Length: 429
Image 1: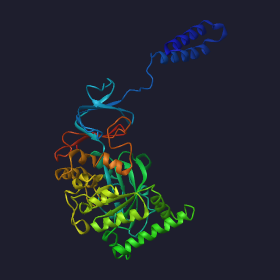
Image 2: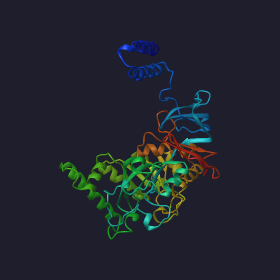
Image 3: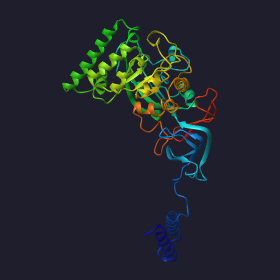
Image 4: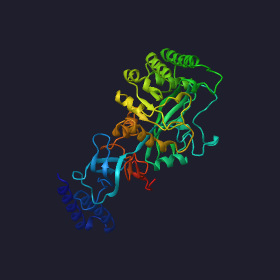
């Protein structure tokens, strides 16, 4: 039976009830008849139901979906937290009731693939620097979500600059500094902003893991300590020991099972070689972090099928990053290596703000434009295992950055930011 026929039947019932006054009092009749009438109107379409139409629309002179070529005169329809439709304005109808936002350029919400925002604060004083504990050289049990502060001013600051997702956590500087996690920059509680509670476990190779501790004192000692910790975790796993007795060992077992990637910071070429050697030995999933001299190891990295979250080249070069090059991202991209570009962990402001500038520098030195934008959107999401952000496509989370010009131009501003379909910033920055 069609909705119209069913509605007609319900109205007939109401009419019959209204004529049977002897069977019931008027006070009992009215609410019953009103309920029947309401049901009939809803079925017939006489009253609005909960809207299934998009509530927002975003129009762009140029829309970078990161799933194909940019769309000129593009439009994005948003329903609740999700993208409902994407395409040129000639093919996508915008409902009259939708709130419309306009921009010169629209991209997916930007992603910082490696930083310490939310653990390190805007003031750079000891009280707001929680990204590295230096009491022990190996602490895999340290959880980023236990230290993340969603109300930190730096989080809202970078949100205004178009960053809707941050992969943040314990910084390099220890053999195993702790865990990382991924957060939305929207939300005032950890639970509301959390996207992935343990994205990686952070390791460090080379002198950066030695400076703060009595041991290790050399590269070889550091790698021996890491290898022993991994062997112990493997032995406990093979022996059937129950989880929960050693939180750090439990986390390392997750790494060995391939459930959580190892994020290994290694800048010098021979430290990168060591990271690849450990991966081959233990079989874990590896993400190279930093990799200042990756251009010397391009073939080996590509052969190992390992992605790279590249260092910020604007950071002050010293020590293991002394040989950092502006061309590295382009060289790795040409070799088929997945590349994302990070803000890093150096304790200076504006931290995440520089990721867009870093991508622009990489583009100026050999990285194609779309690959440069992908390095802080789609590619970053894929490396981190985030499947609902990083692109503009139906079904994806409605995270968008609206620019008043070319995103890679220094004078361009982010004027509107949407996170989960909601406007979280509407001031040009």
